[in-house]
Length: 441
Length: 185
Image 1 (tube, rainbow over the protein chains, first blue to last red):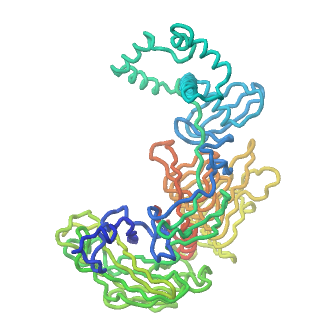
Image 2 (image 1 turned 45 degrees about the horizontal axis):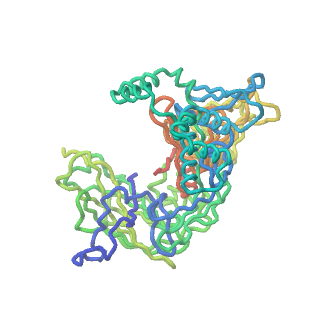
Image 3 (image 1 turned 90 degrees about the vertical axis):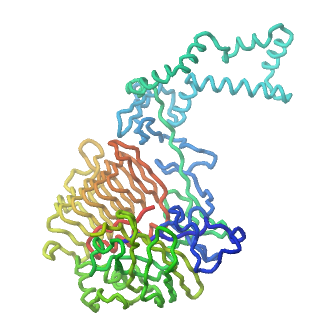
């Protein structure tokens, strides 16, 4: 089956930005239709009923409904970024760690299920969430301690500058003592954990400049046992459940239930529930592997299916003047009416009845019976409607392959689909990827 | 595919005569489920106390050729139930040892779901993905893994439309008796 993408015009230039010479009629092609970032498969899109337009991920606004941990599926407070329970990730491969408490030593060992990473915590006085245990151990590390000392130093300095009265008395006394002393600041530096550069540090910086340290760091990574024993487990990042809004009119497009395990929606406006579904198959009478050669005409079958509860008039348009990279298309039957979707369309019998013959195999009794009850379709006639039943139609499509097309390039065809129903009138561009062009015989 | 190769039950289950079903007394199948040839269902494992079923399959499940389902090991040599929800499709050659696979899940061909992993509803697992032990995949996720052995799993958000798409594809798989994968972003 060919890939059908729907074009979202959100990346198009605004009308005021367009030159006066550019026509705004539908005969003009969208400028960004050749950009693959503007093409989306139909299930990826939402539909705004108020704007009567498709909405891709770029033209919707996300709102966080709930934050939860993807491992334990517990709802977390909005200010949290990591799981505060026992969910931890392996620092080597990123997979989840299995936490096993040891009652004898009062420690917890965390092992990875895919690699051989093992981490054992320090003895615990009481039961605590492992995320907190790891955080405490992380804070004890030299790098973190130096960082927190530096943070504290600058915070105190800032408070002094602002004349903040909340400074602890002990610090004020210490500072006042230093004030009267000669070389007070050097005394503070001597007492503080933030030290002036000593000879060893200067040497290490020199080594770093010569890339020696980087080389030794690489060697350190290679020594896996050392790395495994030193690396701390990573805290699991939280995942969000979002609601969607249309950026243009701010109307709600999707609102999920706040429970992380729930798949219910209070509001849902998907493109697949409004836009007619378009599927393209190679003509069963022709072999597309040999027919898609430069200069030839390839034959396809297009299925258009109504997703709405009301009848719609559909019009498929193909244009003669196409931008580079696209091939010309001929649609002998381009205007038709599609009936509404049956009421109980999820029932198996109704679903079989609403499935085009080209999509039914003879693999099961149900599909064989359905095919036997339908008239035999002759796909050799390229100018007639192959099938028109229930809420779908099957029509022919011919594609003229460019004479100068390179072999192994994807054959793409743009089609403008417009449809009008009871309370909906929409037009959208589809790009059909029909397969690869073959080398001429 | 010959008609004589299949057994069709009253509830619409279609089971290949070439499927290897062990311990059928401990396997529960809801209805309209397809079990293809060379599928192995290990329902004969010793179960934990209180469990009567080893494998439970929902309606409109589709198990492609060569799928192996065995209940996960729990304590000692005892196994716990492996529940697979409705509208779930499992691709060719996939091995499932999960404790729970939700509704509307598509598992691609040649995947391996290690023991006690939990897959929630509306999940698409791409072909050749290995889900580690005790791993949990939240609802509306698309899962893929890097090609290197023991590669990192990538769990991304799946659009909400797939709830409907997967359900429809599972029904079409049942009608046509062939695995119909969903187009994914």
